[in-house]
Image (cartoon, rainbow, N blue to C red):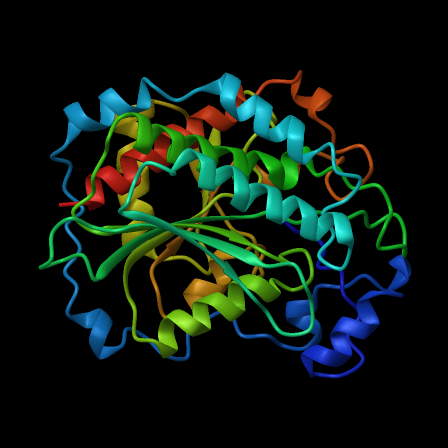
Length: 345
């Protein structure tokens, strides 16, 4: 999650921004969406290939949801956060940033090795080596398996206290915790032999901390390939329990109103946690890319932005800040389960 987007743009081209980010001074950190006026409200609306999708937001699969959410593993998520935050940095321009993404893809491959309906792709982007990751669970119903339910989280990290791209940036909360959630859900799908009717995509975005380069590229590709996406859910900032007022919130700008209402219903029904809406005021994470490309997007957050942890984007975003526990993230894991199970009908 970015209160501040951290690239100083010398030109509009990606190649120029790539060069500039290597030597940016913290005094010039800016909200890049405002700087280059990157659109976050869709120019496209719903395309013809999206209009044909009728989304059923009724809740009809409570037994299946409850069975799966009871099997979320906090211990497994803890191991993922510990591993990812052990890299000195996951900055998208660094070797360790590339290595961390390779580890994620390799580990996911071990989880799904015995499932022929699951495949993993490493997505190459222009101008940098960190590759986004897409894991697909192919839908079993040939009449609707061209429709995708997509859950994503960014895997990179950054330290905005230094102009050095190699500055220590463990990124335990932002956003190893989001990656940990998706990883545990993949484990859960495999171990419980869950076979969706529609196709599920789990995505780890590269270079989110630098103007969401990975997600904007990926969402554009989905649109250009006319891929049908029922909805997208973004997990960024999910493990810092901030106060006693709310357990989580739903970002209400650069998101889809109907899907947000659906998420609220899921929270009330399956989680029974205190939640509210709040406004980011800019494209504060990867959901903005999907919203811009005309897809339904939502972004649940760990609490109130006003109470956001002061440790993000620093060397101190370490797992000890959460007492070495992903207990708060487990709420979002259960929400994500209820999301894809209830949409898969």
